[in-house]
Length: 552
Image (tube, rainbow, N blue to C red; front, side):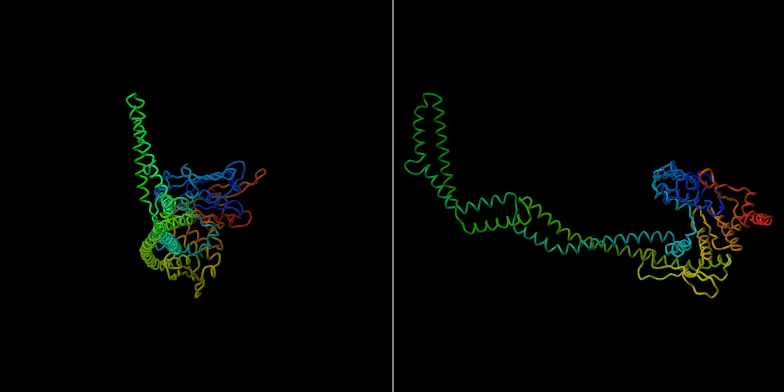
């Protein structure tokens, strides 16, 4: 529940501090006095958006601070999940500096606005005048029905699975789109791979093939030159070996005359041996050089394919071509993997759909079971609010497939007059009727939801007299289970609370300032008397005001 609110430098408010009671608090004041500013400031500390325009003094920062008692509302998990220290007395603070920068705090720990907003939604329900329009929104209607039918846990489970199902469907659609594109590319990549697979590609192949091709093409020329070289060394009368043999013999004869001659002789002998081996190698190599037209054509064919593939894939080396082949092979493998992923995901979605269908079926059953008592209770409260002929109906329409809220679409129907046809709220209910219907719904929901505080901003719009008194009685009953704050213009409602705040404004020097003060017993009599009359309160108005206050 809200214990204290401190507002500084916000709109027309220079600085106020207000303490709130546990039960029913009343807020009154002239039109334009600043009651809406009080709500805007509270909304700010609960996470609403704002800008630098709210600053009264543009040179100072705005501070709104709200203190809440959280003793029995099971919020420890929220604090733990957001890594904030939990305290039974928790302080929410919002600051707006002159540059328009906003900062938020929970128990002096800085938090993002979203966290502040999430906590605020668990602490306060602000029913503003325009919120009556929400009665026509299916999201609000489902929220109401799920509260009274006590399906909050079930709908939470359903939405979690429903969202999971949609996420999986989205992933499946993306994979199927990839598969569609993959099928278009599959034949092309398979052709490229087969083309690369037809020829064995190793590092150095291009150089080796080019050398082998050149050798075969010039076989006769190579053989001739090898043979001439071999003959020059060892064949004929004046070959190199015979001359070198003579040199060997001559040097051998002078070896005995010194080591230097011995060295020369050894070198000549080595040359003779090397030259003889060279001649043998030349002959051996020459014998192996054979012109083979078929082999040449085969090698040239391989060369042609390899060069064509290098050019086709814009590759400069065999290594690059091998890497390209591996990449293509990986893509081909991915095609098969994609099919497996899709098949697996389809099975998963089928399983999730089964869970969603079961949860939606359970939701339908519980909702339908809760509707009769809800309709009856609304009718009873409307009767108490001087609408004896009013009828209220919840209509569920079965959808062909489950949606965000289950298998149904929902519509609240209303009839204000005896024998009247049920119609949608926006086609049949007046402003006063909508206010009373909304109050009826809120009073029922108050018993179902564990919200600490509810604030009504002129829930009495369009009503007066006896109806206003009955609205006040309902607010009083609600305040037995939760904290209720009601902003009102009607004396019948204003007299119900034991705690009364009065909002007023004064012109001070060059600016207008709004103030909020708690009224004592005598001040309450005067304020309610003013609400009962025009101008200064008459003696009878004073008496009526006292009577109203004494009744509560």
